[in-house]
Image (cartoon, rainbow over all chains, first blue to last red; front, side, top):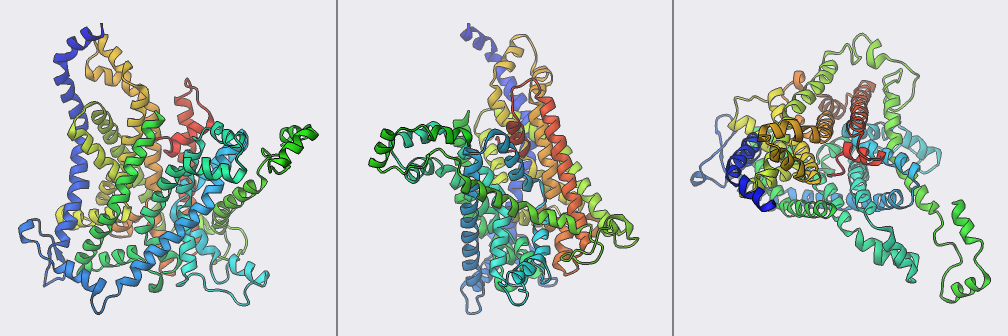
Length: 310
Length: 313
């Protein structure tokens, strides 16, 4: 029966393929023109020259005419005698690493509790509260901390009330602590949701089995729960690390000073000055190449989990 | 908790001896983890109370964002000059946010749904590589994509000037993966049997699509529209790079640039509160609509929540 059905439909397959291809065509065209081509434009700007008269970048679309002016300018800023980017790179990696670690340290226990121990009613309430930050604009969440951290804000009043500080601290100009905490606060909801989804999928029977077979609480956690949550931890960290590396706005709002600026701030500033736009293009390609590996890892990993879930 | 103390009580003397001998502590191993629960509540307080305070300051009867000076509506509408209602820049930013959300949703959802259907059924190298490109557009850091869009609209397609059109084109590309991913996930769960049944009964490809697939996909399409709409309300980086003047600056960018310029005030909190209210209305409509559309299916609150947050795909 099934075979005959297939045979009958066989001549139609070509027509069907065309139908599906036509459905996908607008999306494919859109992605080509407004996603693939734009990256070629960045490359063309990065490899192009400056208009001497206006100081604006000129895109060079023919690879045979590509020049290395912007690339060497970028290299000068990284390694030349007047290089200023070294500390910024180190700072970017350091801030991102500390903020992500904080996200994980705070997020894992919370996600673990909601996934495993919260009773059904409390679970829905807690989930709603965990999800709420998703629906609140990032800028509003940053603004909330800008308010609290003002010199006459509630954080300083609390610190003075508790006699932890004698005079108000100027939290919002050039304090690395504020920037790192701001980053952690900004991106932790994404991590928690990924962790929750992963931890919720762990079969409680496996953990109970660990306990029944004589492992203590800590060892059950180390030998059963933690290995099973490796995948969600990895994807969750990626989901915080990728945007943190391209973040410039958290930094600007929480500090705005050059002594805390990160690679995102450099690109953002270069983009606003036509003279440096070519160099900005070089740095964004540079950042893209570095992030390509974790991005592809993320795509492959999430594909695998969604296939396993089905 | 009551259940756990009840199970702990009747453990016999012998049982205890065995436990002590094998190194067990005498505590009930399944007791409620109060410490973890407290920690989780602390996290929730840390994550939400500051926002509550920021909302509160939007009602401040004074120019401070940090010291409470009494309740008023002045930053929303009472003040004839500086309120969101009367200040043209603030006012226009609210309109622009809504405008971009509507434009983007109207374009991105049909585009993404058609793309998902086509890619999912049209197997081949082209299909899978474009699917990969689409997923890549989902994970790429927004700054890198924004830089690419910026150069595209200033160097290559310079006839699209920076402004509403550029913002919309950028936002559609950035958000088209929501419908594409969610609809594909739904297609995988549905399987092919409905389509094949329709085809066996003599429906053409177009009829199958309209009468069978679209109704089945309706909840997924709806959920993705809700997600696109709300993510445009919250979007910042793209519109920050692609706007050109006050007439096409949405709320998120206005809050950022004004606060950074040192001119912050409760009016910005009012804008943020309006954004928050918009998002919550969209979320609520989304949740209720999704429950209503899937009322025949077995589903609990959590699954509907997950669908509306995009966490189930």
